[in-house]
Structure formats: C-alpha cells, structure tokens
Length: 158
Image (cartoon, rainbow, N blue to C red):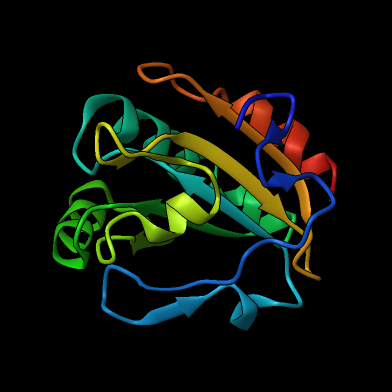
C-alpha cells in the first residue's frame, strides 16, 4: 500500500474485507457490524514502540476531528489483547485497539499491510465509508510516522 492508494488486491472504490477481532477488552469488533458509519483502520507495528506511540498519541490528541466526522477509529496491531489493554491504559487511548494476534496478522494480510519477514503490520491506513467501501488508503515506510495532515485529507473524502 502506498500514498497513491495502489496495492495488489485492494484499491480505492473496492469493498473493504470484513473481519472480526477482539479489542483491548476482549470484545469482538467486526467491520460489518460498524456499517452505517465511516471507519478509519490504522495498522501499526507494535504497542509501546516509539513511533507507534507517537502516532497513536497524536490521533488521541486529535480524536475530536474523527468524532466530528462521525468516524470510528480502529487501530490494529499483531499484539495480544492483554498487551493492548495495558497500552491503552498507559496512554489513555479512547478508541479501540484491535488484536490481530491469531491467526498472526491475518487481517493485516487481507489488507496488504502485513510484513511476513518481520512478523508485523506496516503503517497503513484505510478510510472506509459507511457502506464499507474504501474511500482512501495511504501508508508510510517502516520508521516513518504518518502525518496528521494526511488523515485530515482522507477524512475530507468521506
């Protein structure tokens, strides 16, 4: 996935693959269960890592922009739900952190965001319409944070 929104298998205008993953409290969250409202899916490598924490804290601090647009924010990593609960509590995240732990990275793989060599999700973001269609998608290389301005541009596409 790249900033141009092209990636093998998924493109802007495609239906987003459905999934169900536990959040940090063990509650199942499915994409199809969220139909009727737009969703931002934010794949990130690992909880408690430096760049990931910086990115998610920036989203936390600007959460009102997502809420005002009616967008449900879902952050997905390959960590366990137990790790994600500790991470959410430590950083005061007020959005769902989803565990793509087992099968390891299956959802990230379905979205073309899984790095099988490193065993982690890459920094990929998809904005999904209320009808389940991919409205925008972007990513940054390993070691590079996604800029908040790029999220703002993506929200404008809804």
